[in-house]
Length: 254
Image (cartoon, rainbow, N blue to C red; front, side, top):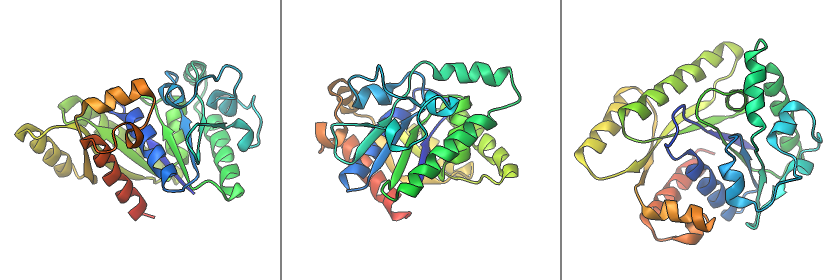
């Protein structure tokens, strides 16, 4: 089982779009996929699920108030092979609790135990975690427990700064024996010379970039309204084909 965190310290870089589309494509390949929504804005949850009012959430798992059985916390989606562990606004409470304590070791331990239960079931092939912007209690737990980090970023100076800050944070976890893979995915790209120069700057920063680049497309925003991943909403669009290329690279790393 591979655990992939989708993260960037800056918002608006395409994290949720990447999480939902990669999860959907992996599921279409026949992999059993669980999408964990770690963002209190719960956009990934809303994309796939209609009603989560009484459903267990990631907050329940991290607080220890939910069931410990892995499958009892998951909500099946209309898409075959794809389930979601929902988020809600309660996740913000963990950040306040972390400010008043010495850290987030409790959340990290509980998420690790939860993922260990997933490994033991022998069915789940991929877990994709949609992280919020910033270094929150939930995102920290995700970074500690994941095998690799995919960092969507726009090609602008502010997004680049967010990538480099996240890289420093991931490297700081090495003293705890945590060394997830770290690869950058350029999103919302165009064909301008400035865009190409920005990509080259990321490489000069020593970052490992996916060959796949997600180009600007109105279909990405439209698909969020229809709540259909691009592979179903607009399978021949440029962005859908870009995510197909990302899928091939992810699978090639197995």
